[in-house]
Length: 120
Image (cartoon, rainbow, N blue to C red):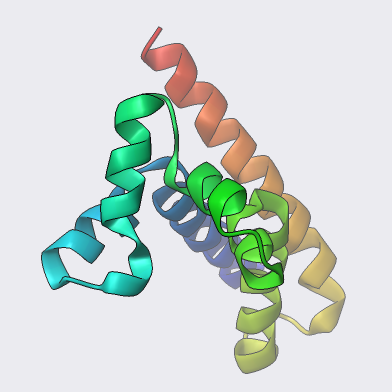
């Protein structure tokens, strides 16, 4: 069960980094990764200052993969599923998959709530 809590923590952290920060854009700019579309994002962000990278992708590049990656609940489910595919024995078996997915959803919602209250 401890491994499941570790997984929930890491998935929550990864979700926050990917969906709530500019880390993908910053690393894309640093490594000159054209597929990140950081130049287009920066142009749109000048017009819409509150635009997040995940919103930019979902609005301007709508395809199935982008919808999966920019949806917090979908990405949490897929990250947990991938982790369970490789580490199911260490995580207590497949019966804990649903619990870890829900735990990740609660974790990211709680983290966003706490950070919002801290920065108000």
